Length: 169
Image: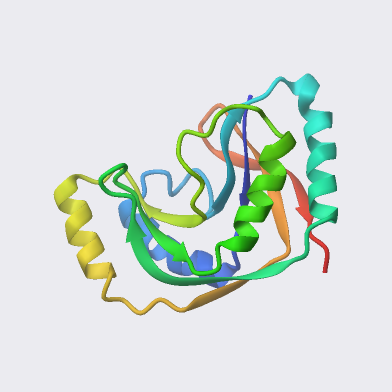
């Protein structure tokens, strides 16, 4: 089964992200807006208890924090993805490292960059047009981050929460 580890930001941030995702993200209906901590990976169900135990340890040793989203950016030319950029990357990077250190040992496809995708699979022209428009938008969003989620993919492609892990207050 396919799993991933993500953070869902506040509902206000999700509303803003979804206003763009409806138009620019073909995965809009499959999962709420998220910040990925570990990209999707295959895991044998027999190894799930070990992973859950590791994630519980990570959560109990990590303080909650705030996330600030401050601009729209893209991964072009590597990937035609548009995202809300995270201003304070350090807490996300630390959490990613803690999870990745003992998590699934698969190599990540891309270097870890905390972000919230609002568009993907765009043509080069569409990407330039949309990023040009959105780069002028004033983005000033905050979200308290006090949990992360282990999610899994259903047969129809929809992602569902398997377990939620609360960070220290």
